[in-house]
Length: 268
Ligand SMILES: [Zn+2]
Ligand SMILES: [Zn+2]
Image (cartoon, rainbow, N blue to C red; front, side, top):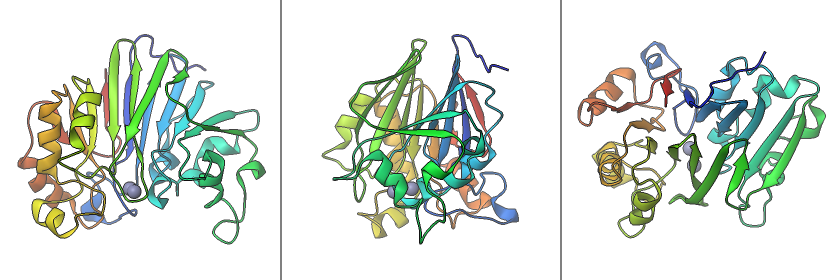
């Protein structure tokens, strides 16, 4: 079976929670799984981050699988050992990451996928997992992926995925910074879909400057300045319940602008 979406892009929010998975009856609407976004187009299935959201990825048929890591914080990696496709023999999985200091893409995964944190290494799984250190631009099928540095402790990358004349910008784990935000606004200018970090309220942001995340109000300001056509706020704080997130959302909601919900699908 081939998952073909022709000249279109299908984006699925598999995990929009930040920092650590959250659970409870009051976390069902926005979901508790950590960062993972899937873009399907043509014969390609391209993941951004491998948080716990990747555990519930849909059937990908025999599409080509790639995964781009924004940065090696644990909430973006911890789902990988439970990614169903790594247990499929003859499955090739191409993993891309920008070198983090001296650490290659392979090493960024190996830090988690090795004892004592985990009993198995990437090479122990049946799939053929291939690691690539990124030099931009990266071509995957008909898509081109570019990136700019994020504003985040330890670094990170904002990615732009362009295909079929459309673009998606994934700016998770991004802290609003007056001096640096212009680069993001240029990079994401008139994007069709902006996924942007909005972890904190204004009060929380003031207390947590330097933690590497933005408030929903600042994220909205970025989205407006770059004239993003659709906007979804991501990296929900693990302490924020559905009710709390709906209240935050009410302050920024507009047509085509909302907080990402678990399992949400956006077609471009
Ligand atoms: Zn994170
Ligand atoms: Zn992070």
